[in-house]
Length: 149
Image (cartoon, rainbow, N blue to C red):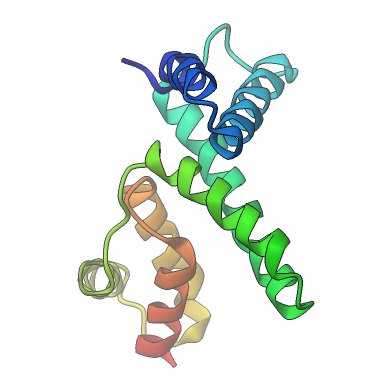
């Protein structure tokens, strides 16, 4: 079942279970999907690739919010964001771990012939082209800096 169709099913189940935190998170996801559909360049229906892009954006926003709330000592708000991030991550494919990311980065460096930090853009371009849905960009960036720096 496509992700876009799975959200209303999960929402209905969460409402029946009276799980207010999950209901809120699923409603936010549904609203983000609708906003994406209403955007000027959106297709008639979101496929899984577009839905995953929206979910990754939401996950990144939640992670940034968690970091800000933790820094500000707002533990209750950080906990709410963590709960919502957990729901979002249920629908995202699992990202590669550090070992797999390192192997991909090494392969990309070999492919591009990168030798210094000036070649970082080439390496990241190859990585994102080949592994966009499987790769944590932040982790890849760190590994590229480590290997080229």
